[in-house]
Image (cartoon, rainbow, N blue to C red; front, side, top):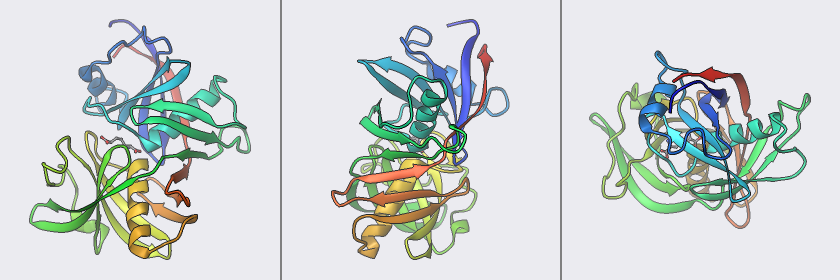
Amino acid sequence: MTGSYPFLKGHGTRNDFVLLPDHDGSVHGDLAAERVRALCDRRGGIGADGVLRVVRRDDRWFMDYRNADGSVAEMCGNGIRVFARHLVDEGLEQTGHPLLIDTRDGVKNVTVDAGADGRDGRVTVDMGVPRLLGATRVAVGERRWDAVHVDVGNPHAVAFVDDLADAGPLREAPDHDPERYPDGVNVEFVVRRGEHHVAMRVHERGSGETQACGTGACAVMVAAAEADGAGPDVDYRVDQPGGPLTIRRTEGGRVLMTGPAVIVARGTTDL
Ligand SMILES: N[C@@H](CCC[C@H](N)C(=O)O)C(=O)O
């Protein structure tokens, strides 16, 4: 594909995305990994942790999510809030009723609060029922930690650490069990801050260390709640470098993620 096409830039707790409106799929077709890398390049491109292609498919909106390295992922928690914010901002959907947004991890129910000026309300996503899949190990250099394998549609390893600085600068993907995670893994390092309150850093598969990860925050909450023996309907605050998210696990094990989402720029690009 050549020529200019529209884009938007948005973020959720500073996990940032380039959005590509492509409602009938005719603009970008099968989005090439090379194009995603060019868009996400923080020096030569627009700069982002990932790309959200906005597609209309089978009478629903479909979030076609790509990591900054061009790889495809099943789900993106911060991305789907930004995706919903875009739909509402553009008048493609209204607040006041749940939106159904399709992802590679299935259809998600998303509620956008109107907010004071109609654009600043928080967004809640029913993330489904994460699966706790047992113990594993992760390592950075010589340092090793026990971790919990949590599947939130995409794979996570949650490691409780003494100090968030222990994992160092996270320039490379932490070592992990390749048999357990044949397609790679998102790794969260977590400390406790108080009752139902934790803080995390994340190294994302395909994007490196990011300021926040919605699915990661859900994985962390579930691992922490399980360790705490917490009952249902308790709100956990999950702090991240880019800001906090509120995560709740309901009676049936479904996880609700609430946080901000904003669009910060619109334009056209030749990339
Ligand atoms: N930042 C996202 C997760 C994006 C996908 C992840 N890097 C993967 O490859 O699974 C989020 O907010 O959940």
